[in-house]
Length: 118
Ligand code: SF4
Image (cartoon, rainbow, N blue to C red; front, side, top):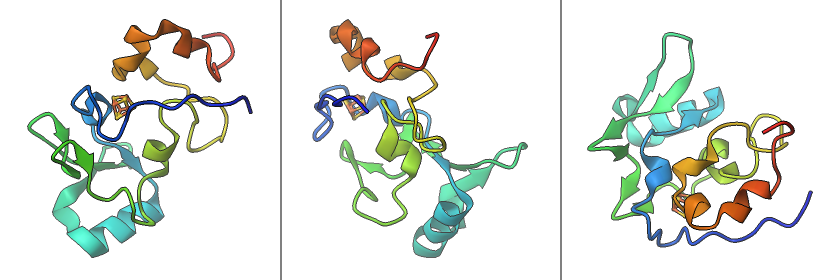
């Protein structure tokens, strides 16, 4: 895999825009999150996908512009990989990376670890 550039995530100058939609969780991550934080922090979509809840436009685990579960073993793999690596395949991130405003500021980032055909 090519070198992945650092982003200014900690602290994020974009009010953690990438946390606006919450995150997908694996079954194991959801189980661990529920055990540690309670079932009300997550929900299951009608397609059976676990997701973290969103309050006031940000993931419930974002506290003071910082992820409060970043250092936990159940920190979602989706968050760990974003915006360059897809958590499921280990390949390039397949979805919209421009929810991170840094990609508009530095369009060359779109060329990094691109998903083929995008
Ligand atoms: S990925 Fe982008 S929006 Fe998300 S924390 Fe990092 S710099 Fe901020």
